[in-house]
Length: 129
Image (tube, rainbow, N blue to C red; front, side):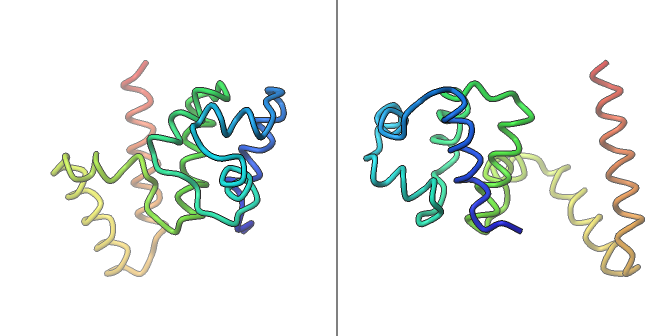
């Protein structure tokens, strides 16, 4: 796994939008040196609020935004930054996650849990339509 996925991703998207590093830093109210360090992986990616600003500035789709948040969270070695608040607020989400964890620990088989998660995601997708 590339340890600087986030920095490379945002640098590529920034360049495609023809935004200079200095301009991006200015738009984010960060110093150019600090932003450069983030893009080069010398500093951790910013917090969730800055990530939302970045997504907006770069015109990212929801899928790209989710991917960017995942990359930033991986670079920071954290749970995806857009999820902790939801998990804290939803007792059902905590229950589902704990049951999935226990099932995979007890049975030693993540395939069963993976299938259950895929079925759950499919049901949510069908509900949207």
